[in-house]
Length: 145
Image 1 (tube, rainbow, N blue to C red):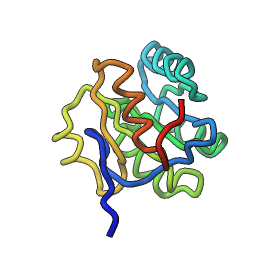
Image 2: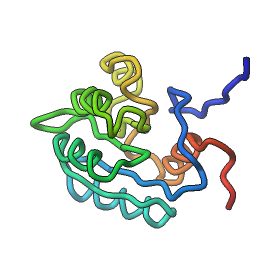
Image 3: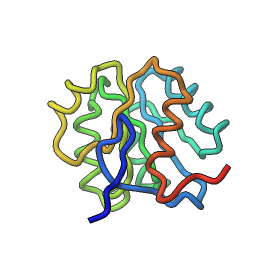
C-alpha cells in the first residue's frame, strides 16, 4: 500500500490534475474577503470566482465545475457545513476538493462536519502563501514552476 503524504490542513487524499488551470470557487458572505482571496488566487495562477453565499456556491459549482471550493463556515442563510453536504450530493461537485476557510479552529470544524464533506482546513488570518501551498498539496503530482 502506497503511503500518501498529507500536508498540515489536508484531510483527504482527493487530488486535482496539476496540468490544468485550477478553477476555484471562493465562498464567503463578507464580499471583501471573498474578492480579495479570489484576487490573490488569480495572481497565483488559479482561475478563482468569488461568491457570497452557500446557495450561490451550489449554483456556481453546477455552472463552473471547479476543482476546488474554498468555503467559509459561518454564513447566514446556509452555513458552510450545510453547503458542503449539499455539494457532496451534487453531480457537479461530488469529487471537488472542499477546504474549510474559517476563523473557527480545526478541532471545531472536524467535530461538526460530516466525514468526507471537507478535504482540508485553513484558518483565516494565515498568510496567503500558506493557503496556496495547501491548495497545491492536493495536486496529483509535484507542481512544476
